[in-house]
Length: 307
Image (cartoon, rainbow, N blue to C red; front, side, top):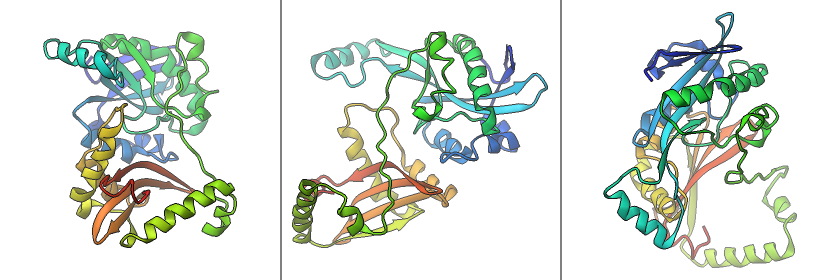
């Protein structure tokens, strides 16, 4: 299906638009303005993670022609045996040398290729309308693009009530990797430390003593990681490759660009030992929340130092 095509649905019309067409579009900037991953983040992901994904944007207009949402979506050829260990995975790999698409499926995914998904309503009050409009049009859009599966990727549970029409119309809700949330109503480390169990405090003290015997570890926080990207990216890949389940692989350009175009939100925590980077954590700061997106570790020291 070519960009520019439309799909009629009971509440309005879906129009497929390109990212280039959205550059001067106010609706696109409004669509995700109150989300931690705003329109800038989606643009960065599309520009820097191109190998595995085919990106599209769906403009949802009501019967009056008003743009109510600009919803990012993407197509991916999903590996149906991702994470399967042992002989089965090895057999599939051998078959794919001859038939590359063996046990894969073209899927339409709503949301973000690198992170949690959001409904991209221009006004948050319209999120229920957007969800209903997507439910009415996604199946048709997927068929026209030869996708066999439609997925709302990694939408937080806070959307559950607004998305209730999906399981009522043939969709299945499947748990994703759980997010861990830690409230921080503490004034300092000591106050937080006192809330931990006795066993946890004892374990942490033991680890701290071991770390103190090693050369000192220093930390800095930066927004622009570009000068250090050649050092931190191998650490990210080291962690990424140890994971049994993989989806996207973040690139050097991703890390460079995120700090340069989202300096108000991007934070890189960098730990050094003897001047060498041994760990980093990439976070997004949004109002009073901090989201830990990914980490990188030098495994030659990380496990011994309990990084």
